[in-house]
Length: 126
Image (cartoon, rainbow, N blue to C red):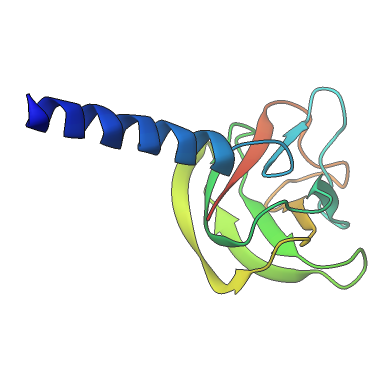
């Protein structure tokens, strides 16, 4: 009985942690069918993160690679590249403090307007 209660408690704690981690301000989404992606300028995914992030879960469904960066507009620093049509957990190096702006830029697109279908999402993990 104690083991079952312990497992239930761990499950509840894990759900609370997940809910906190993916709460508002920690998830960014760019829908390229609404706003075309850009290969020249970064577009904001998360304007100000609510948590410090050690990792991120990134997904790209646009069919082209995407570069994720952190920093103020015009001063972005590249963090990692999300493979085309893939999702993966990526380590932040260095870790990114709360209040960080995260942005995206398309790579490998043959036209200057960038991706026009699919989306990119970024979920921060503390």
